[in-house]
Length: 253
View 1 (cartoon, rainbow, N blue to C red):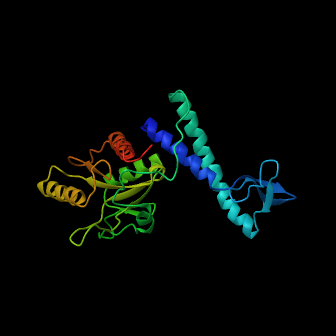
View 2 (view 1 turned 180 degrees about the vertical axis):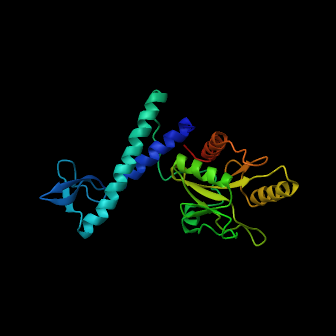
View 3 (view 1 turned 45 degrees about the vertical axis):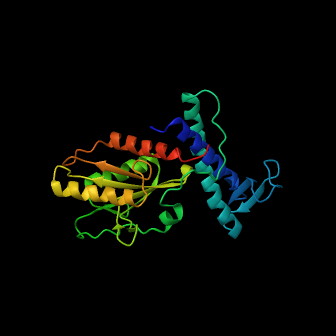
């Protein structure tokens, strides 16, 4: 993993924050029925480990709690693994960082835009794309980047329509969201840069981002490939971790 120390601190604190705002509990069986036990509820201070609540998983309340407890189990597992990794690399405890975060600078794109954005808005021939779990990718290189984002654990969308201004309408190759820093990044995969036409296209693509307030390696990442499929996945993953770390500079810690 290429995650920096301060990035790891932010993720640990983010996971703790998420855990603080959802119920905690576990699943069990009671008299032959599936039930969920809750031993922490941020909206009910009476509930505790010594004063648990039990709900049938088939009840209306139980169904809602079941989804929340699944999330709790997943987040708790992530936090435990991250704390184990922290202790293996660093001395002392991670700093306490308050959420929601305070930032010196807000990027051009936000989470609300990311959630509402529709993927697969790029025009193409029906037989000229790669279906990657419902996302329409236009090259093997894009598929490699999608796999890297999945490995890193971040949600992404391909081919989103981006209306930067009245003159600039773009469909970047990827947008991806990093929840622990509440940040949306744009990725362009610029291949075949041994061809002049592709160099020109890459130049204007980068220029349109910069003129609309995006900062390279802080709001957007350009993956430049000389020719063919000479793509170094380890290098690209390192670039994405580095971009996230540069964006952390905008956070007041």
